[in-house]
Image 1 (cartoon, protein in one colour):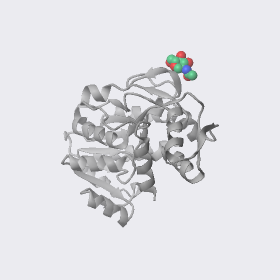
Image 2: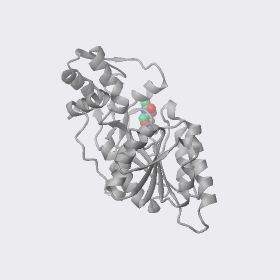
Image 3: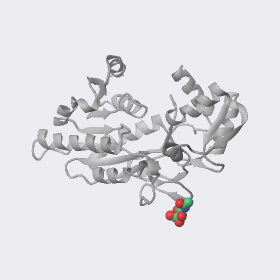
Image 4: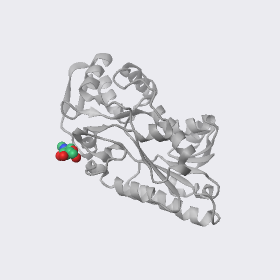
Length: 296
Ligand SMILES: *[C@@H]1O[C@H](CO)[C@@H](O)[C@H](O)[C@H]1NC(C)=O
């Protein structure tokens, strides 16, 4: 398969591009600098120098099988990337050609904040967290495309490696000796490790021609207690306890404090996907060490 990963140097896209290359596919990635291009090339990912706005990637659409969009873009950004892809697919692919697969990365935050009700991949979206209120419309635009085969993957809160959203939590513990985080007691996080997510992208990309219109929640089958996460971080980091919650200071932090009780089934049922990594709290020592090592 020939697949282009948009965001190939990022927290989600890099492991996905590596996993696709290891699975034997021809993988392309955009790199903004020579240094980033080198990182991709060393992983046998074909680097294309340029950024999303430069349109250097559009000619590839003539012969690609799939695009995986992992760029966490604004509403306009997500739409623009998709619309440019659709336009290029119409112009560059011969009539009657197999449809290009377009895999869009959304997130489980679209399910919103709810501490009582469990949601699944196919639960109707009612009240997304405010900062991502625009996202369900983009999911629908892509899932219902007739020019490309649109598939949506919604990762939960990511963990592992350089820690993504959890990095500032770890940083506070290390550099200020305190564990302080937006939220209130009793919250729970749906989480997924970046490597398990990468495995899901491989499965989705390989089977995408059968998956048009499908939306997959990508999360471990059990959520994690945020109280336990913070308590464990106090223990392993040597920060001064007890941990504390504080009020969110912006919409992004309001999203961070959301509890989404996701219980995904679709990726397991259709693609045989099940996350393999040890849990976030259970192996927090490993994940804290990985963040330290990668941020040094
Ligand atoms: C949680 O979801 C249920 C069912 O959709 C709803 O009745 C309830 O109001 C929601 N709770 C909150 C806090 O949004």
